[in-house]
Length: 335
Image (cartoon, rainbow, N blue to C red; front, side, top):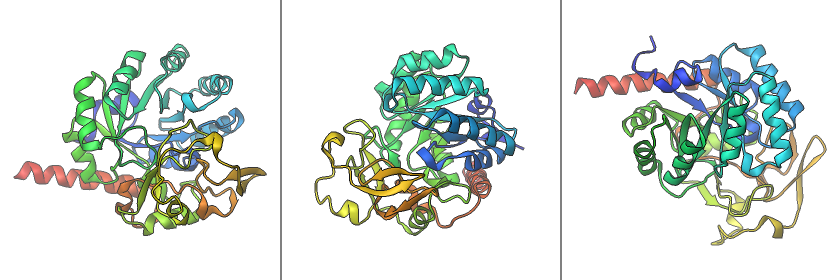
């Protein structure tokens, strides 16, 4: 029985429950997206700046693993225009129905996706961005609080941002940043959201493409061990802040957490991925396919990292979120 946890956004996306898995860059490949969708949530392939051949293969692999709906996460503001156009065409040709965009709202990107027959969910970090995404033709908004891991586009907490976005737009809102539990799902619904968007919660999933080193660090970390900085900015626009786990590399920044220019950062190769150089201070996080000094890369994680205690299957993570949410709703109703 889906019951109260089946929200209108679920019908828009084609899933049973409003637990959305974030794109998470290279961490979210077919194995993870298929596992989340197969468990009743909404999986998403993180295909930021990836070549179209890889996107095509990953989409086919998800379909091999599940017949449930899933989306593809792209970043128009951080992707070369020609590549982004080809990515959209590939998604259309492969039958993708839902795209998840992030960073600066680009109305022309939404229009292009819509013209190809795909719907767009936009992840934003402010009320003004939410309004812009609605005006551009998005079908739903992901409101990301500053607690989030990975790239963070705002400065306001989820507790404040989510209800403001819900009040400022007419679109379904999904809460992001600090949500990894059933209690969080219930809290998000109380704030006016219809569901939650989870990255850190799935980072240590068995199926995640994150390197074992990254997964172990996530499991061991507490919520006060994250750092908000724009130092890991090679490959992204200047000023693109991220939240990562504290490390020797972040400690070396001292008090200079912000103000880093990607064009001024020396390219110091510290790892490789299939022959491609990976640089210190890049936005790359450690993946299974990488070798090198991976502990010096961006160990993305949000403040809800303290709720992640083990490496386990994504289906278990989804099931536990739903079970705890139902229990909390029952407790509230019984008061």
